[in-house]
Length: 268
Image 1 (cartoon, one colour):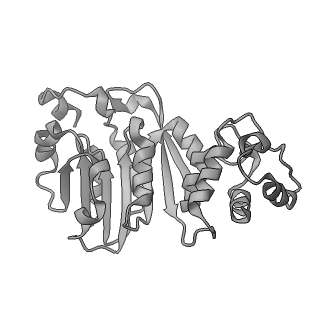
Image 2: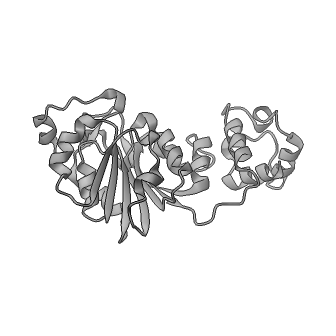
Image 3: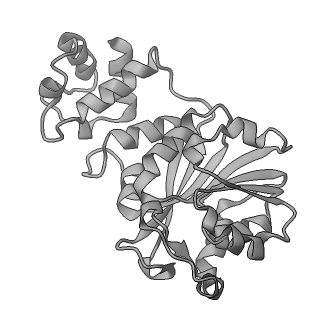
């Protein structure tokens, strides 16, 4: 695959965060740990040179891939053109209507498997959460630092508002790390494979919008207490809820569990 890229004299574009995974063992490991069930449609974001796409297509019923750089089309035509269960859309994933793109497919399970461009990881995850199709599972490669945030637990420095946002919708598991040395060109940082399984039943919230605003505000200044970060909220009600957990307003956001934040939001 690396030779195909070289033979086509492909110019990597920094603006698209193009770092292609070329290690076959890692590619196979990603697909294996994805545990793709029978009759599954897989969405891939950032097809690149089709390395991962080709492995996914061996086990998925269908693969629909998104690639923003249409200069990769000649390469992918050579490597993926003969695969009848693969469709590549050359467009910006963030501008697509996913429901319209997949309406023609019949499937029992919908997965996302992707090596996400580091510079737009969060917008892509947010789109996948808020789109109007039900994704059962996501297996995504992200910058190692982001992976640590997504899978963080309370009382550690990586735990933040993004952690809670993602964990409200999905159960998050860190699968394994990927060295920067298995990419072309080599990025500056290592990566992690993160698995997100959609929660069968989300915790009850009176007001999701209020909950997510509360989370953002609580973590706004990480070294400040809730009393300082939430001064625009009804602190009496916040204190009431915290008392149930033997806590008070001097606690910092990083010490609270998702359940405790949900309790505060519902009380507000």
